[in-house]
Length: 557
Ligand code: GLC
Ligand code: CA
Image (cartoon, rainbow, N blue to C red; front, side):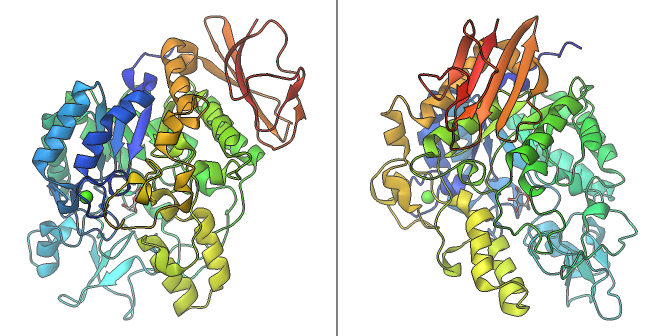
């Protein structure tokens, strides 16, 4: 089947986490002024679209993912005038801006929730999910994604409200049509401002099983709500309604963050018929390997293996072919750094393995996402003490598992935080080798990765062999070679445990890609003498061999 052309299939997205990107006024916190000043950098990289993590008014319990006013800008980040200026400037440079849409929950400081909690009779009471307790305990055993129970008792009325994330992030009740009206109105407000799309936060979780049954504990302290909140009974109905009422009136990029999404569900969310969203982020390669049935949930120190990662991607590549569109990512603000998790962040192999990973991802079929600093090969940070962390997920997990329950040893918990905690992605963007990596003239809100003197944008821009210029080239190639966007996908060497290989074909032309995921030379018979090379992280090749972390994309004759 011939793919329908669309700008959001041809685009490359660059994600900004504003708090950690660039600080324009020296208060230690990244802001909109900082982003505006750095737009030319993103233009130079060649990305088409910026996804902005939330910039709305927020008390920052979860760094902006807890919104207290959807129509205003967070004080730390600037004003609506600053936002408008940034949007204009981005558009002037030919960059689009996609906003984060966080509507599974609000902040507990949102006026809707303040009204809702005020009394049983308040007109906004059923805008959130309130239940009576069970024998003096929570209504069911569900765990919050940020540790502890997903229910919080509210003394004013004696009932519990649901919060799948922190207790300052009460879940909205999407069963209530007034809630859906309010969300649609708010989305229209931003569309009318001229934004270019939405990344929809945990959108797979907006529809809950109205029976609210207990979840399986799986050896952990609480039950899992996943089967009852992810891909819930009415989620597709709600998204179709959103499409009809708002999305269909604009030319937007829409991507749903879809925790718990399966291939079958993704075919509905990202259906090529355009009835819901353009694409979704699935989680299989970032939380499925390893960690299945891990009583510690996401906390692990194990590295995922290439065959497991490949099996997941190949399943999605072939499974959605012609039916729905893929998004492609190695990392984001919720994940450790790509090169540390999937590659090799040692001094010897960091650059080569970062380029290898980039090749592997950008040559697959789907829209690629780059998380700020990934294009520099930024790494996880060395965390020595719990006091260095800022993330509510880490702070709560430490309290629950180490302090309150002695469920996980402090040493192992810290090792897990080093391996997979979100703060790895949130250390300041490394701009240059000046103090605080050029991120801020003040004291940064979170520590700077000490490797910034070597790894920074200024150094990358001065080095033609940098990871940065490799990403730039990948993006340029995407523009010039429709096979990268629209070609069909076929996995190769399925039995090989160390080489990730596949090919893409369009109009009879085949692009073959092979990536060595190890630090050793490996035999590889995929390339011959006549082939035309598109890109590689090595300048010279050895016949019949892939060098350590070597990646090649080659048109075969
Ligand atoms: C999403 C966001 C994450 C946030 C959570 C709750 O997973 O990406 O950062 O903590 O939703 O809003
Ligand atoms: Ca600032």
